[in-house]
Image (cartoon, rainbow, N blue to C red; front, top):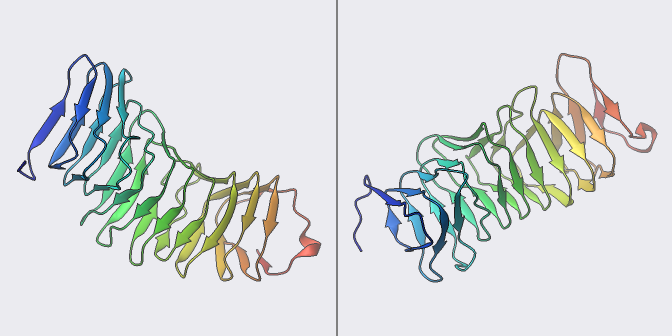
Length: 239
């Protein structure tokens, strides 16, 4: 099927529908019921993916192939992808919407021409979170929960004052990128990079933190709150 890269295809029946794994321009998932991606083929979206209402479920679990998105994601329904999701645009991209997305496999930021940011959208990443070289991810005011590893070879920006990065699994931060956080919360186990983590806001540790011979640098200008950490057992903390 040849679909123009600037076109919009809508699956909008008030019933269950099958969604073809094709090269789309803009893809809109709407209407009541569950829209299920077919179990073979590759879904590539040159424009935006929109899941338009709370009554809409986009079920992609039967297809193991990665989903490649070059535009924005706007989720106001239910979508918890079980395959790798690639953000591959050539200009800035946003993940937005009123209902949080759980990425149960890998979320990979490939875009090396613009920032990928969150807008009015918290995300939960159960798989690995990858930021490629020259790619930039900005949570803005939003929250990220990560249960697996962070492979950062690009730039992770700190976001703004309300943004918290929660490590709720067994996580290692790897890669040669720039590791910047606003607020950090550790509820399970976090192993730091062997380089530097920059913290602008608060550090809350109710789990286990392994410094890994790296440096944690607090770079903000306000008053910090540092909970439940025995500083006598580590070195490389700078305020």
